[in-house]
Length: 270
Ligand SMILES: Nc1ncnc2c1ncn2[C@@H]1O[C@H](COP(=O)(O)OP(=O)(O)O)[C@@H](O)[C@H]1O
Ligand SMILES: [Mg+2]
Figure 1 (cartoon, protein in one colour):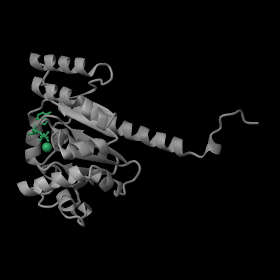
Figure 2 (cartoon, rainbow, N blue to C red; figure 1 turned 90 degrees about the vertical axis):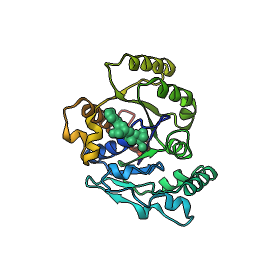
Figure 3 (tube, protein in one colour; figure 1 turned 45 degrees about the vertical axis):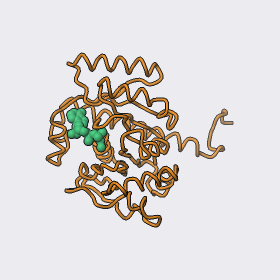
Figure 4 (cartoon, rainbow, N blue to C red; figure 1 turned 135 degrees about the vertical axis):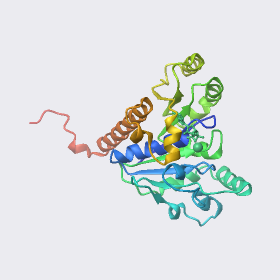
């Protein structure tokens, strides 16, 4: 089981949209997926099929020492298991943050209790970085997808936090979302980001701006079903394919490393 954290240093970058879409696209590729909402905005459930904001979720486990978030797990029509964050007042929000600050391994311990098949994955939607939620998700993750629009302010905040993010998880990739190649300013912002990243972090994945994406969400459908040949659908499928391959490679590596030594035929058979 691998953990993928979706983070960003700016608001409204598409974290929740991507978390839900990737969970569904990977489930359609046959993987057992868990989507975890680790953002007090509590919107992931709405993307995955709930009619209203879920009243309960991870917060029950955070606010009550004995509470278990497994009790608040849902399964959507595509077979994705998901756990909402739950509705929180300002005071409860502060208590959740205080607990996470006091127990830096809280999320890692909670994830360790999940009983998913080896080829399954957990994808975590997070509060904007820096936050307790995003920090714990980054440190618990095997892979961090850092979402940014190609806008100067968003890219500048990402560059400012890049070192801390990579310290939390060395396996980090940048996802440029809402790309509109017609805008010169976006090209400049991408050039600035590329220069700051250097050769170590290629800007491999891009998702184009598509006004139909929020409309699909409002209708309770998926863009990749409504408009499968659109550029943004193609981009999302491409990202899901890349993740699916990454998950399969991790599994192959794991089996190779766990094979008994005497099954490795390195010499010439006699
Ligand atoms: N590629 C895109 N093209 C157009 N709109 C997008 C795209 N990605 C996200 N959005 C829209 O941007 C808004 C914010 O997305 P959301 O996933 O809620 O961001 P976050 O979780 O980072 O705050 C939503 O209305 C969403 O539909
Ligand atoms: Mg969100």
